[in-house]
Image (cartoon, rainbow, N blue to C red; front, side):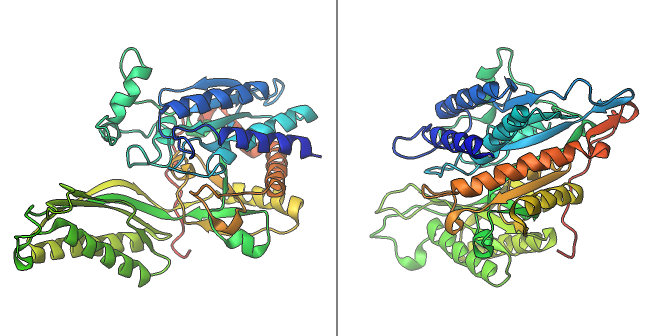
Length: 440
């Protein structure tokens, strides 16, 4: 029934996967030329699907479908359902991460309109401009901007060329850039639902096309910078050296051992740099990144405390100075039980059996959980591979995910308590972020 729509979705994914800043590899970063081209391409597909399209102050692409005029009734206001993901990528990426969660909702809304299905709520499809943290080493700039959580400190982050986030954004606004407010009141939202490839092996092991996410692990990102003293590689005795890179290397190994000792803690040092960077000069400065994740906030915080203490201890022993800079921290997030139950019913209706997963990867749902209930649908990816050119979700699995999303939206439309809000509560305060319960 959905084969034609699914085939169109696969074509969109392939076409979008060719829009890149790098020749021969897929790379799209925040506000880059490729991101601008990607926004233009997806905007056209949104328009063709009957959505009203706009772009906000931080480059997020937004396609809106208004509710059926007769929906709601006197004394009630139709809410807005948010669907989406991000359009930026890591370097040398695959074509499904992020993009699937933007393009699949467009296809689902098109299918519903072809069928003549009336929706008692508005829908916004969101193509966030930044989630991966590649350009400015801090993720979620797009969803932070959309949800009113972008802060002045975010604007001071610099890319490798020395440009700050503010300087990248200012050309978009002729009168300068002001921190954006939230696009919606929390009380006016149904929730945020994100479709994403699993980026792990569970669905493949379970032989299931899709699964429902119950929560997302907390994440800490930052950078250690060691400072020592440069010296000649041939004339400085080993016992007299203050080698910043050697100190950083020792910390890398400590981080690995610390994570191995406490599963499901995961810790990654993904970047390392040394200055002055000459083969015959002892490094005077060395920096390493740290990405730390755990489903329990307290366990993650305890691990970070021990890593920072180890860095300071080895720095003293080696005659170095060390500085820890926190660039990002997100608490663990629990998905909305109500939305999870609806998604689970849709999954069972389409593929007979469902599975519940915890996401070890961060997603825009983390940020959106501060303003509205969230849910996620994972789609099987081959060998759990992601952030890689060989990342792959089959057309058959994408078709199942599309069927689930269409069924979910229809189920939601039949749930009046979720899709309308009384006018008297429109000034309700924003919800606090949803946290994972302590027993998970």
